[in-house]
Each structure stands twice: as C-alpha cells, then as structure tokens.
Amino acid sequence: MSAYLKYLPLNDELYEFMRRQRSGAGDPVLAALREETASLGDDSRMQISEEQGDFLGILARLIGVRNALEVGTFTGYSALCVARALPEGGKLLCLDIDDDWTAIAKKHWKRAGVNDRIELRIGPAIETLHQLEPDRLFDFVFIDAEKTEYDAYYELILPLVRPNGVILFDNMFWGGFVLEGSIDHPSAHALRELNAKLASDERIECVLLPIADGIQMCRKR
View 1 (cartoon, one colour):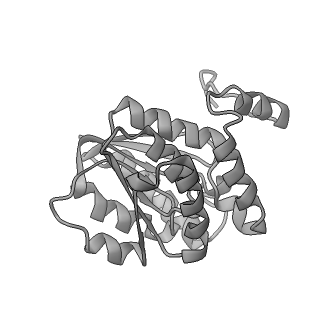
View 2: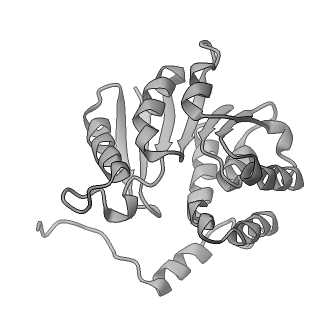
C-alpha cells in the first residue's frame, strides 16, 4: 500500500461530529421526514444520509440548476433538498414506482413549500425515460433506484444532460461489496462494472466520493 494514500476511517463519534457540522442540522422539515421514514422499518435504510442531502443541495446551487431529474425518490428526502436549491421557475422531475412511499414525500414537499417545483411520475424508470421529450435538457441528475438498471438509466439520460451538467449515482460502494471477489451478487456486479465504465468513459469526467455508501459524480464534457 502506498504511503501517500490519504483517508480517515470514520468511527461513530467522528461521524456524529461530522453530521452536526452542517448548515442544515436541526432543520424541522427534514427532521420530520426522516422520523416518518424511520417508521417504515427496514425499508428506511433506503433514505439517503443527512450529509448527502446537504451535499446535493449545495452542489445544485453551485452549478445554478434550473432543470433537475431524480430516478428513485422513495420518501422524498433527496428531492426536497434539491428542490429547495432551485431558483424561481426551476423544476425537478422525480421518477419512482411506489405510490405509498411517494405519498409521504408529497406531504413533506407541501409542508416545505416546494411541491410546485416537483413533477412526480410513477412507473418503471426505464419505460418513463424512453417517454421523455427528446428536447428536454437537464442540468443535474441524481440516480438512486434499481442498481442493476443504473447503466441503462445512464445511457438514456446522458443525451438529455447539458454540457457541464452533473450526474450523481448513489450506493456506488454497495456496502463495500463492489470490490472484486467480495460477493457474487447482481447489484454488486452491475455497480462494479459501471464504476469501471464511468472511469474510462470519454463523454464525461468523474470522481467516486466517499460520502455515505459512495457517490459517483460525473460531469458531462
């Protein structure tokens, strides 16, 4: 192992310190959404972390996002963070397959006053992406849905992203199981292949960030 590798493993205490040092810490709307999502039991693990939400919002503001796309909305935490970052007239299109989870999302979007910025389409993501208007252009995309379909989403979405637009993929560590030889699982295999594909894809430049379960951030050239 190179002596120049520089990273810091997080323990629980350091993670708690990190999550408190955020502008959004203590936000009552986000806290209420997290609390209701926690009541779903094991399914609640699909919600992104608090620092991920803040990261998405800050990044969306930095690049001046007006048109955003989310594939996989669940109970709406990431969508809420992105929608809050949009300027007047900005729009976020959310794709999901579950009416019950997104009913929770819609309730909290309304409470946050961003429901008019969000369009929700229910149905299989690949089918919905095929139906998008070919002249629709996005500045910002967050992908957090079926892992074995990530590459299909990518190829359908990339032509709809403006130059210098950003695509982010969640769960690109897959709990560490993306490492070669860890487990033989379809999602781990798909994400391992996609990470390698993105790193060599000349249509974009990318960096894999150690935020939560790994975010692959891509800029369209």
